[in-house]
Amino acid sequence: MKALRTRIDFFHKQGCLISDHAINEMTFEETTEEEVEAIFHKKMSGHSLTEKEKIKFKTQTFIKLGQAYYERGWAMQLHINALRNNNNTKMFERLGPDTGYDAMNDEDIAKPLCRILDRLEQEQALPKTILYSLNPRDHVVISTLAGSFQDGTTPGKIQHGTAWWFNDTKQTRDDRADDGSIQYWADQPFHWDADRFTKLFVVYKT
Image (cartoon, rainbow, N blue to C red; front, top):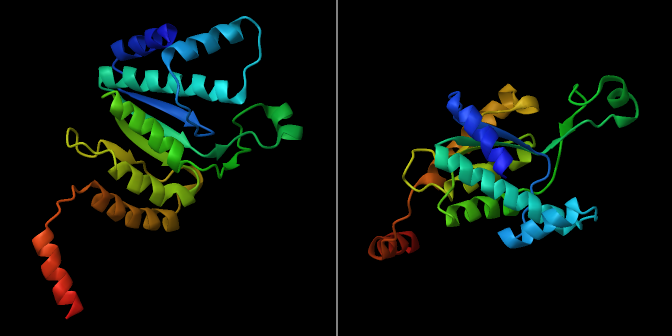
């Protein structure tokens, strides 16, 4: 993590204020710094890691990155659910990675994304965040989830990013305009007024 912070500081000194992460698979596992330290040494000593250990290491690394961004006032971008380099048999060998042979992925993102944001919130280190998904199925999920982590310190602190890649079409932009209204309502604080609710209920029943 020290090496990552060194690179973050380098770019910060050049005026950088935003990061961008490609998240091909959104995962989360509760862990501790001590456990992740043991996982690191296990791998460095030549042993194989279990799938759960890999996820724990990724989780802790991501949390530490989020904290570093928060401390420096950066925004964090997450680009989610792209299935990359699909034509491995022919075109990957011929042209290499990231040459256009990608597609939408359909991994479930709601719960792990929520837990990552919530963990950063618990640490009081949730940075400004912009969320993108390549799968339009996720758009309403992201819009409503973003509303769960607004804290009033920064307008639109957690945002649903603009239409991305395959979604950059008129139809998707129109759909996203509707999603924007959903995010607006998700951002509004809820104030319970029992007396007003009772009156409305009586009127409705009448």
